[in-house]
Length: 538
Image (cartoon, rainbow, N blue to C red; front, side, top):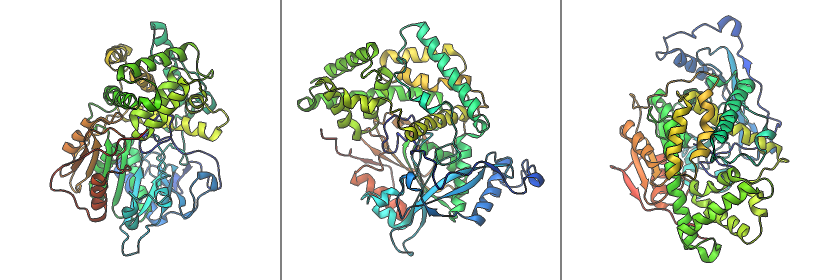
């Protein structure tokens, strides 16, 4: 789901730094034999009932034969030994499996147990769309207690989805232009403000087409799911073990729909609502409502810890301070670079993750005490960070490309204006900022598909779903909807909690059930509700 400017756990999902290194991704290529075979089978219905299914079979068979040429990761990837890195080649267009190819970057760390303990690979997607999964194997390097049990049985495998980072990447604007600040206040004061934002959104869509138009029609979740099946084959696994968080749950849901008999174990954490009525326009509107609720939860915590932060001892006072900060930054951007939009991007990490609560509150507190430097550093741009800026721009480009391509979007500005004006009245924290981020989809210059109907198809084993009740980025109703659609699934609910991406948080009730499922396939006979994980301390 929607990313913030803060590099965090499963849900922010900024791509890793992009520095050309010894293992720079090969350019997109034509497959050998392309001239003879480019069209053979591209319209065949003899393998799996569709041209894409035939293309997946061709690519997966090829990947299984070739495997992955694992090497030490380039030093500038930030992936230390014994993590290994490599590439998997996939078709740009699965209807033309012998046509143009693109690269998918993958990495792994071997299971920590014996050969007898090993159950294959556990493949991870952290969300986005646009997030890099390459940091996943580092959970072994950093000795994560939560994942120690699973790591004994599984190779932990991460990958950059098509368009992302170390894979064949896309871009929509010059990265240095993308990070310039301050940007316009997302909350419009006039029709002129709205016209200006509409112009920026249309220009962004045009930039995507100009810079990456050759990939845009193929930047869909179903294609990424097909890539995932080719990666599975390249790893030598007959069936997929998968952990998906945030947008990764939607990727997993689509994979489970397209390749039900290829699933072995699947954990889906913090769930995107997969209803075709929700993907993606309505999903983002629902997000605005949920963010306001979790924003209030955080402000309540700040008020309860006023002895530490001195921001306000009631929710109302904290909200007043927020509005004052916003107004001040609009008139005179903090440090010349932090305006209202930069504030929203930084502060929204608190509704996203409990782990950000203390950091955001402390940064705000220092500002109120007369020290704006931490706020400028954390919320402002870093023009000298070329690699980080490329990663940030790429991540946003993939987010936009996938959501715009996955489903039909409203093209009527009247509808966008009406819906977001209505929501802003009650849920002002994120509504307009979210609207402008997604508005390029209204003028998207590439085909938009019909959303995939997620459902249980023959062969799908029981899936484990995990969700907190007050999640802002992926509201709880999404988990309930997927639970209904995937028959035999089990839902673990973390009540009275709202952090996004809960399988990487310490909660013995949840952690134990996830581990038991991954190691033995064991599920409770019914859905389970867990008490919340510990509330952050100031």
